[in-house]
Length: 295
Image 1 (cartoon, rainbow, N blue to C red):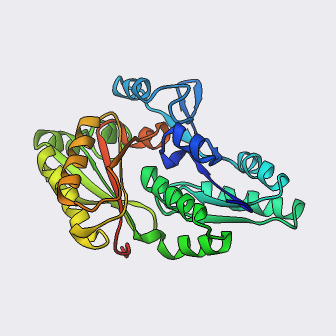
Image 2: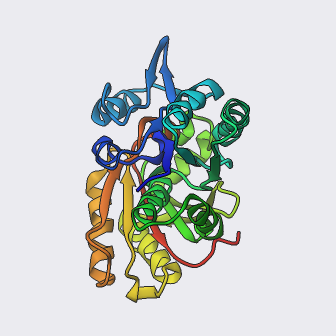
């Protein structure tokens, strides 16, 4: 691999060791609890267990995105080394980081006229965003040029499916995303919302499912309905979870039972501290390649 570097942000929710092994530079989002500010550094300074314990105890983290200067600091060393940059951004539907990356690109273009920075809006989040980065890295390793890879990502990014469910509505009530009445009824009826990312990269509620067993079955049915090739799907499958690994493993087991041609085992990651600041504990997300997201 030569000529360009793939970069991303910490909100791709892949393990620290993954980025280190692949040599993928990333910029970190931030979050604040009370007066203390933290870096979303993939569990290095604050473990995911510690973070979710704080949230479960009542902490309400406030997040902040990567700013223009931080993107300049991410891109500039690569340009100075004589390489181009292909940056894959967290969805513009949920963050302004994409626009900040574009501003940094334009600033650096004036300073490094012989170098290029191409920015892709992933229209995804968490390990779905991470799966897009992973696919890009595989393609670069296979010899794809920066132009070929950029065009492929722009053409295919909406074929990457993001499905989520939550078994704990506490953080949704605390953050004002559902009312106290909806929380009470949902908790009483054991409602688990099933959501996905639409074509704008926004998280959209799709169904209200009663009970964890049923929502686990339903999220795998969504993969059956939308995965490339249906039950013959032979691509990768990633899952991320916020302090509910048993639920994630239940989804992974069911996926591996239904889809016999998967490319390796299902990879289970943690939802990072920034995405997790908005979901709270109890969220499982399933990612796979499939038909195009059109709504």
